[in-house]
Image (tube, rainbow, N blue to C red; front, side):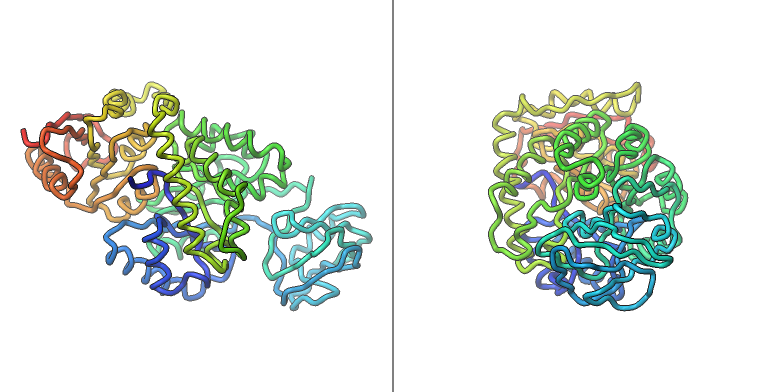
Length: 468
């Protein structure tokens, strides 16, 4: 049994060698995330290694460019250990930090801070309270034990509003870089509504998908418009927890996954899924349960961040996640009636056509659904149905193949486009021969758009009995 939910691994020094990349893909990684908030010098060489691994293992691998957005970050420093109740300064000096101060290069924000404001560092792990305000700096008191500050860590200031409806200069530059690298997805950070999605859409190619990261209460308030404008949603639980409160995140996660399921949009659950495995070779029971919960709820993908980027046991983390997914999916398959998705067609004729096969898609005699998909839209809709049968997507566009490989249950094949009805059946039969699990007299569903070669026009479904 192969897992249906996908695993995203964040790139970093821990996995840059080709052998380690191979190991991760063999253990279950389906996509790699490039974090543009950090140094990406030489990332083109790593991408080249990934494409070699893709070819060697004959498995399409998606690349996600995660843009920085308006995220506030600290300047550069050596690792600093700050004591509880120690005085510490945040200033706008572009100089290396030390045990007395660190750069926070946002002068307009520094000037607006007041005595009593909290400054949260590293996804809220460490808390500093403003004691006094100077012209270009603030003096704070550390209110966390075992506080460790490192370069470029995130900064969050509660109840301090930042507008994030426009792409930053850095984001626009990084979109160009991501396009050159051949990234298949662009992830947008700190959006508050659909405006950022629409702005990014104008700058990217049609075969690149957009992931909207849900990280604040503004995004939750505008969630329907964001889901409709985007191709996928990422529940970035770290910053979301800081903004709405940790106790509010579980119900927000469940609500978001349900809503995405209804609207046939994929959803990724991220942040601290196996945090302990950055330093430990084994996960906690709570972390295993966290992964299983996301899969039970219907997530398309789960993501590893520091666990693979800088962790000591990246391959262990991936295999732990894969085993948990397989165990959870085995239970779901045994109780499939409890987990069928409720999808709304919203009067979309193409969606209605594909939803018409939903009941047969759970029939044990149906072994595969073969989807001819030029744009990836049909692949996304079939994936959202969560069929028991295997999903095989065929596209002449290699970037679409890589993009849809991130979707639940999808195995993607890059093949020539069919020229007509007979050619479509010929290609389908060639693919069926390659899959040993499909036997004579078993059934597959074949979907495509007529006329061939026109993206977004799926209007044909055929039930085919193998060998007939």
